[in-house]
Length: 276
Image 1 (spheres, rainbow, N blue to C red):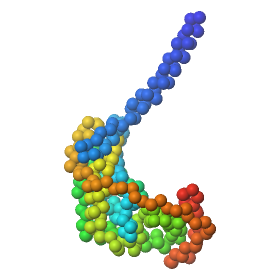
Image 2: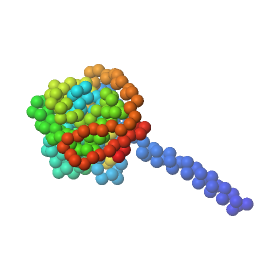
Image 3: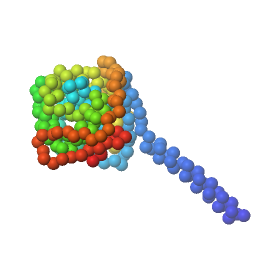
């Protein structure tokens, strides 16, 4: 009977521990969430054993917000934030981290990292670039030239042409049917005023989320975010969702002419997904 009682108690204890472990893990991995007065959302995960501090800043507006016939504005704007390699070299050499900017149809995201004793410098550098970007004629022409070179190559690529043809057929004028970075023709219609207008309309603090993880104290990290990002203004107005849903695409094969290459490429789509 004594052995039986011990086994029963052991089983009960095992069940209790199995229920507590997920709860403890969840408590350790759950982020600390804050919001500044300007609407900026901040998420923080602290891990003293981490070798670095990582920051992700997401602006919740991407290429789907490009104006009609001026596709490429948001891609250009994402490249204008850090228009040259000097800042990336600073992150790599001085902060022993990295810096990368991604733009897709839905958002622009900045990913950065640094060693733990330099994360305040990292946050200050990111905040200065985002809250006061150098959007002027010279910078705009520089990033336009780089993007135009990439687009010229992609517009001669069979797979890229086929991919865009499928998107247009599926989505018509819906933003997902337009080229992510625009075209060589649309870039010619864009100037720095278009970028400045898009920044003022979409790059408001209340349209941004900042996530920080790694080896840093959350209380100091939040004070730093409040200091460096607290003066960032809110968006001047909300952008309504007024995109017209596309009509069902026509059936049958479509042949698209694309100059500049010999090889052929075939693209297909089913249930809204692209395939090769």
